Image (cartoon, rainbow, N blue to C red; front, top):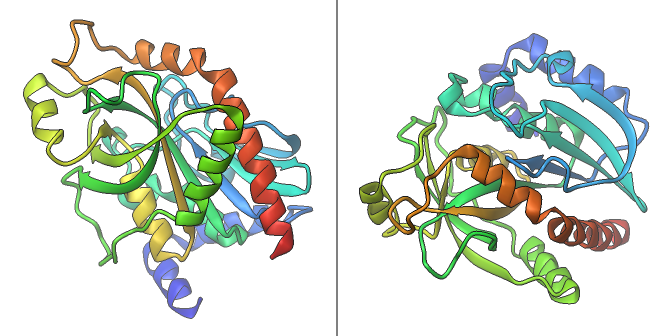
Length: 275
């Protein structure tokens, strides 16, 4: 942790670190897991509410113009598992720096969580992944062309987290695919030519996750990633792409995703309590 503390002190303002530590010290229970909710995922994960904070009260600058991102941190409990839920994401295309966009990861590490699950809504780059597909991320490609300020080793998506999702998915009758997530800067949807280009590198495309995964890996967190495919990439269908379609697809699948995460949290809690 000495190396990590030196890293944090170099790149994050002292007032941010102190504010985070102040909030964390008020927690009555230590969280074991963190979940970052992407577009349409905020209402999927439920539990007994212990504390709730707006991002602004944490000292996290937050722009609310992206529909589907509430900008709240909740400390929740489900069965015997205490966990963090970040409902709202900070995107590079909004003008945030790398370190601002990854503040939920930093908070999670300071809070002592062992693993973080990054969720997102994504566009399909493969005809085998129609809208409505739920995909476990097993690798990523960073095509944001936004320079990383630190030399990273490649992030690895945790195999045990994937296996738990597969297990509970099978029990719930939910088909889980696996694929490579391509992260781009955004904020616009891709052109048909860009979709053909990106399909050479991965299976779904979105505007988040890749930087969070890199920092989480550097800080020693186990990483899970899961995408909800909400739309075809441009040129793969005749429909017009818009953000409302993303939210509508996510809303229609809320019952399914709620069952998936409820079972995952129960299973993760069993494993955490054995450790």
